[in-house]
Image (cartoon, helix red, strand yellow):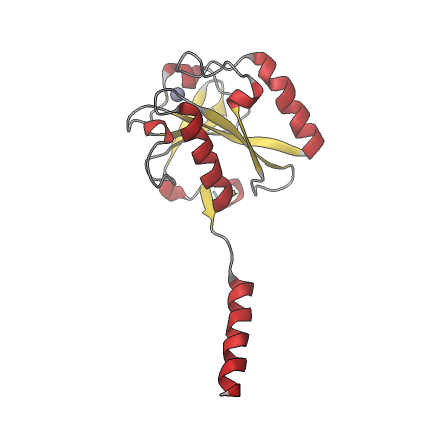
Length: 177
Ligand SMILES: [Zn+2]
């Protein structure tokens, strides 16, 4: 599992959820591709589906036109990144894959992860709570992964350096007294 783990910086995750929430407006699905460098799995970007295909959210369920892949592949080439996962929202708390989700993987590559976020991403503090995680095995087969498998790791900012600096200032201040 370790080598499959996706590390997503917390601030990127929060921004992405907010984007999904805003674009879905609580009444339609929205989604995004999740991207990172070619050689390791520290996520650096996400791109909302409707930035690639402006009409893909119009019907309420995602209908992503194939033409949307052209700007996606261009972005990947320019930024030297690849798509590791995708995320889309569902209404209500159910995050099981629909027949459409099962039969139409956004990226047809084994190991690709698909996330399904509940309540059109409108929940107050939406981290991995209630999110469905599915690994594509190829041939329209999927494996359900548990949040507890840590396949997705939302990485909190590391304040270590700042904390050390602060401690030095406190020590210096204490010596002066
Ligand atoms: Zn779906």
